Image (cartoon, rainbow, N blue to C red; front, side, top):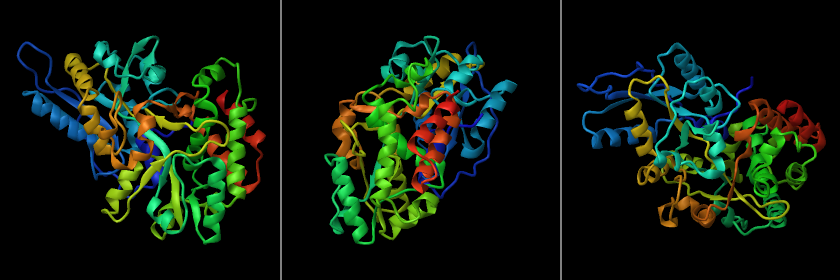
Length: 428
């Protein structure tokens, strides 16, 4: 089965972060035991994209400082091997006590797959269960039981260099319409620039872009679309919103909104284009703005803006794409449950999100958001956003098919109807 890109793996793919983790996995399993109680040393496995900031390690350190006698050993595993390593360890009975997990279904390291295999600890504390937003409960629960919790919210939008764009006479903001955007594409092209960069040769980037459009045309107006698709009541091909999303990509391509050669471009085209001032924005999880600004050491200031809807209301697209869960076979179930409960409570949730450059889960004030989210703060505070729909798709091949289909639309080798029908076949 094809593997859907997970939260941090997807960020790496979309952003082409150049610093990869090279840490070595340390031993797993619980350690020292308090007299008469369960072990007070637990392991915590995570997948990591870069070593600039490790928010998981930071919170583990905070927990041990506030809980004398507890030790948490954080195992940082490279993105390429995380799912294989985790599932192998769990199947062998020597998995970590707490670990990063992918929400939804579609791959071996996802909540649904692991819970059905009896490998996840059920989380029963009301405070922990309530930390899962109602609209994404199906991504973290199976059979009415909660097995994982989201740790942050990733806004999916345009990572945009507004200062560079304005210097070139280009204006794009949260109130811009799709027609406004097309006009700005024409203006940018006339000056030898591109409003957007797209790595068309990378299915992850192309598919992510399409999902931003579908947030406004499909999942905003119909949050339960995936359930309807699973029940066979709708299809990609007969859904007007999906047709509108992919039609918009064809329009954007014809209007010259992307850099020359976008259909065959790799991630280098995005980083080089942004560095040289040839492109003003690209499509990625909002947390990537912090990664880039940190790597640039203050030389660039980025913001996150929603992509204007090609039809109807514009919805900010966001995703609870990162979660943590406990091992059903842990020797320290009470400690594991308490750590997870503490992890997703305020103010830890805000601290974690700020370190990662993401948005905190739960109720949040605009003043708690990072500066790059100022343009979308109202939507975040009032929870006016649509989820990234592919988190609830049947398998990862559907997402891959969408990505290659977007490239096919840009080269003229596929039509909108062909792409959508291919996605329906992949779903089955």
